[in-house]
Length: 260
Length: 298
Image (cartoon, rainbow over all chains, first blue to last red; front, side):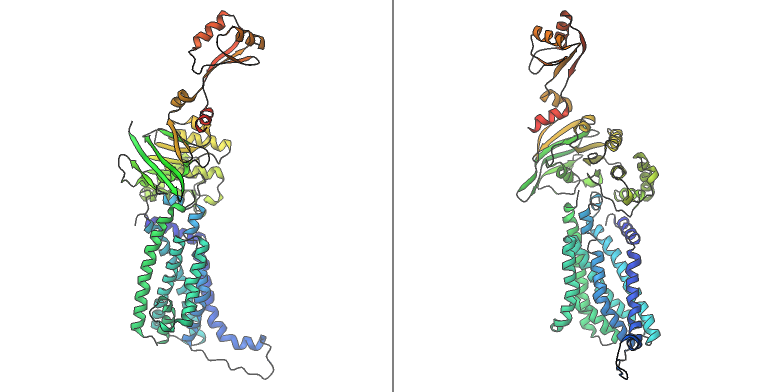
């Protein structure tokens, strides 16, 4: 782990000075607030701008507070994942292509440190963003729809965080392996598309990382079959470890491709 | 002299193409070696292998007598176009480079500051590298390469991207470093190589085709001439008629080609004085590195 703390400091500075530390949490917070607020005020909004015939009364469904957080998770599963893939797809491949990695690779650092410093910092940033987004959503849900027990929210967040770490690991491992364009294509397929495919045709298998977000929502709703969840979580952790090992290996193997 | 680095049979193949083909050389400690060759000769690939960026397909690199050393701990590397993280300041980047090379936090800070002042960036310590000009980037590149006092400095075309003023400044800095550390630098600017070199390595088509000191090359390839500047063209013609050697004429100037001939300067001076020629200047001219280079690569 030679050079890890120095490289981690460099990653921290990068997130701060590129304003990712500001705009990524901000986007998640905005979504966190918009979801309960729009759901609460949608009937009034429709009434004033909806151009509905006089006397027509549309029966809006009554949302339970927990359903609002699940709906917010749906937003994070699409736009949130898109942001994560696009913001970090070039974390390693771009440094290689533009040549900034060269002056790091000629130092006696370990490529595991190089990869893990990025993995750690990006996970911290993304998890913090997701958490503050959900906490903002939880607060507004409590104000507008009713409270949700903290234990349920935190159990849900813990489970969902595992899925987020898996997504970050995929994006970074791909970035260590492929050029940025390839990372974008394969990264979006393995996260967004696979998550959608899993929700459509994934009834036949239960132990898969792509089910973790669904299981997180079951945990929130209190309907989770925990043995199945632990199996899926165990597999996800195992795959995360494999992705980290693969990413570290590919960082070293592709070091020669850096622009000199 | 102590051998610092020995490269034996270094080859790098990309598919069917051999970028570097069985290159062997040694670098003595505290010497400057110029790696010369036309574009595509394999200079950058050779430096990249020494810097640990590229793994050789064949051959070995021995550093201080050991092939197992982590060479990256002992080198400083400057690419032709060094790229920096634009959001870091010069001092932050240099300090990071020093720490990654093994210096402690306090020492890294002090050395970074000292080195940046040495390369002339003392007033730009806290400026973001994204705002740097080409010359400033080259200086910063040099600073990050020497901040940890490496035993071997590898420089890839250190001045070729600079204007004449920038080139002169960087060359002066490099000359200050010469004999403080071992330097291997690639260049196709032959004047620079002539200025700062103990050893020359000529590469072409991935192969090391010649190596030796500049004097050795001059002896091997030079066609030394004696240049005589007469007071007028008639004097030159008179001298040509009297001379037992072939004289090339160009107005008031005459050249005697010394290649393969047993002609000494004293013979020429004796003839000049016996004929009472009107002479302004007599000098022995040796071949420039450019002339040698052209002969080597042909």
